[in-house]
Amino acid sequence: MRLLCLLALIPLVAAECTCESDPEERNRTRALKYKLAAIASILVAGAVGVCLPIVGKTVPALHPERSIFFIIKAFAAGVILSTGLIHVLPDAFENLTSPCLSETPWGDFPFAGFVAMLGALGTLMVDTVATSYFKKRHADKTVSDKSGDEEKARENQGEVHVHTHATHGHSHGPISTDSESDLLRHRVISQVLELGIVVHSVIIGVSLGASESPQTIKPLVAALSFHQFFEGMGLGGCISQAKFKTRATVVMALFFSLTTPVGIVIGLGVSNVYDENSPTALIVEGIFNAASSGILVYMSLVDLLAADFMSSKLQNNGRLLFGTNVALLLGAGCMSLLAKWA
View 1 (tube, rainbow, N blue to C red):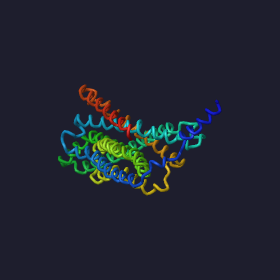
View 2 (view 1 turned 90 degrees about the vertical axis):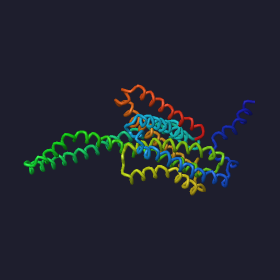
View 3 (view 1 turned 30 degrees about the vertical axis):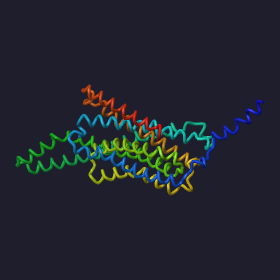
View 4 (view 1 turned 45 degrees about the horizontal axis):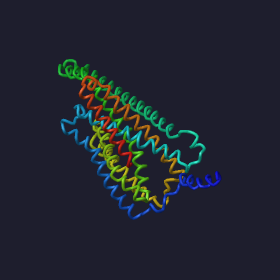
């Protein structure tokens, strides 16, 4: 009797560990329609999301110095934090613990968490080195400019207006240096953040484009559109604060908007040879997802939230601090809810 029970359980175990897609779920024609709809919807949603904060800075109420901007930024940071922890990291664990992978080494060590940790630490190092480099370069340039001003002042000691200009320049030097330092910091943040977002956006696009199951793709169209919209708002706020030149701003916004649609197109192109359950695909996706998760978690907590929440503007304004906390929870909550569908 016991032997019969064990024999009856064998098909169930095999079914749980299968690495094949159900042929009944496949319908290329219907799947293609949903993929084309996804390309258009995600492209528009991402473009609108990333452009809103950038265009919004032309509205006085939405300037980075205004209170409403802190609230919007907190909401966006909550979205990015949730993306890293609720959307990307679980996918990485699922990829790297798949029964389609060999038990050794993938089942013997939590590679997803380890790679996420390395991603966060690597982001810290890049963040620190890049900020230090740009600050040093700016300091050298400032010293060079001051030397030039002093030489001109000595050459024209008899001319009062030259002395006045030199004094004016020196008295405002520290303010300019601090402002420039903050600007460089925002530029490093926006570029590293875009890197983390782009990595997992491409992976999402390729997976969706390669899928041939309408049941899988259909709910993802709306969910991923909202996903890109909220992420775009977070990235757009950082780009807005970085005050890039128009060309660089357009390139960054366009790059973000196109990543997932381009990923879908790539997935369409390789759908005949791409197997999402193959060991190679699972390992590559898992490692990239884990690294992307580490980047997003670090950026949201350290560069987006800590800097604002510890600032004197929030610490000395109870209503604004309460508003930013509510916005943070709303952003994280909305993005977490989307995990039910995407």
